[in-house]
Image (cartoon, rainbow, N blue to C red; front, top):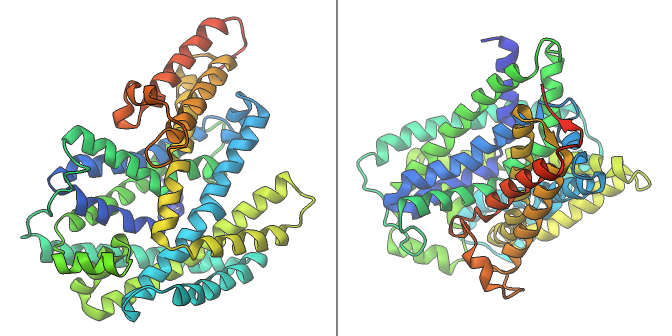
Length: 445
């Protein structure tokens, strides 16, 4: 394989390999019990497969998804990208880095969470983020380039050690309120994969990967898609290995009733609790210290990178406000949200992700179809309009939100699998083919 492609593959892995994502597979493994395999496969589909397909599809057009979104409407494209950048930025992903760092690096050593310790930690954490984001330099990239391999090696060592420790343990008891069948467990894992936010982030960052491919000497004439696919497969293999093994360890990690009661009574997050205590069991107190330190530093570089990316994007579309003002606003807002705690940040992100993911997956589906079938703009417009409406109504009528009472939403096809949007996407696409037959066609070579 071309060495240049391997370099891009590891760069792509580093983009998606956020330290915060490490906390999701162990919990899914722990609660899925006997349904671990369908659950983790569903998680890998959305946590690994869809983001990398998104990257590949983004290479079809030199303009990436910005150009594809213009096929719907320029205003829709701007609004959708703003929603994505806010989601992977100050609304959820950036606060999650701070809250995760606190749970991993502070809580295990002070005996429990408290509002004061969280505030002090986030004040320091986001103060450093602000300082470095206002003056972005190569230092952050260099630190990230060092931390990513160190974190990866640490996780591999943790996995190897844990496989020996827990290989003789039976799987954990199944959460029977959530996991009742193999099919249902797959789709539960599928929607849990939304929490990584990688699929929607891939839409925003696909241009970065495309530019990296071009910087390695590949051109439109020599072909951009093949090296992109090869790089994506490298990243997919690494991510899939980490998610699968950490999920398996969580599935075999024994928590006593007293430990579970302790987690609940102290307001701890079971995701970070599992990862911290797995590290402790594998390598003792040094394992807990090491994983806490590395995860915190990795989260910090992610936080700085996201603050810079979001601020640059908003400065690009609203240049009247200075870049540094965006940095200050987004950093302060992220710190305030991080002080709600990790559980609150994650739970509040779910309704937003349940809207953005169907829209994003529909966009990728349309681009993929346009690679093989000449597609009129009307197909993009009808499909995206229908999916947007259905996704919003599904969330508003859900039990968790409950702002609208629409019982008929519960009877939509594939509703039980949280895939009700798919039928509307395909229907909109076909209607566009029929009524837009005389329109100019979109066809990616």
